[in-house]
Length: 260
Image (cartoon, rainbow, N blue to C red; front, side, top):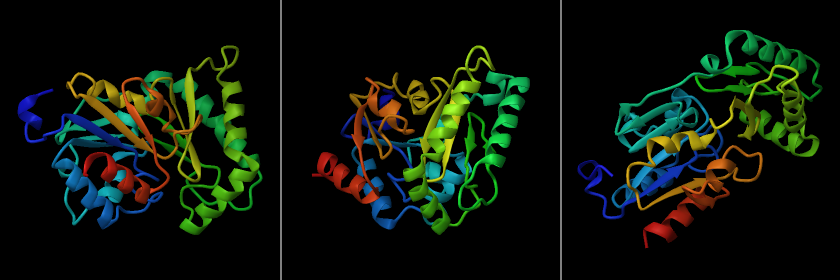
């Protein structure tokens, strides 16, 4: 580890946090209680976040008192690390389209749009596909939905497995005899799922920290089950994984582990 950068931290460990469901309620702003936890932790350890959303959305959620969110975290990883910062400095990035190619990307999106047009759910809103640097985010409901509509869809999806069925169709499309794309499909949040190249899940961010010399890298996330977008990094041998149920659970667990 670059001793001069983190010499003020008595514990040479890195804590990485998922955002939605871990540091905040889904798509909600960080609370003063969680903000205080992070500030207290940063007096002892190195901290960072890793989320699937783009940097703008994560920044909206984690910004406190109009400060630049990069001032409050040592490492910042949006889009699973495709947009990455270390101590406020931008690191190298990659893009989804460069990886899959324009022609295959168009065929993938056309299939998604056709499927979305035929899917039968109680309501639909707007912004069903969101292109990001390192992934495509797909929402059968639409990302323009209100919080109440998101909550209702989440419960509907638990019963009817709308996203899981959609993903199975996309896996068929990506087989070698079809598009021959090596993609991962990961359910995250309440209303959507992410599509990204194999290996571009949240483990992608570890390449930026594994050579820093930390004694341990801890990861905290709420969707650590198989198919959840925290599963791969939670299970990775380079991390100590912690499954949480809510921001309040994150506060409790981190306080017990690092602040007592």
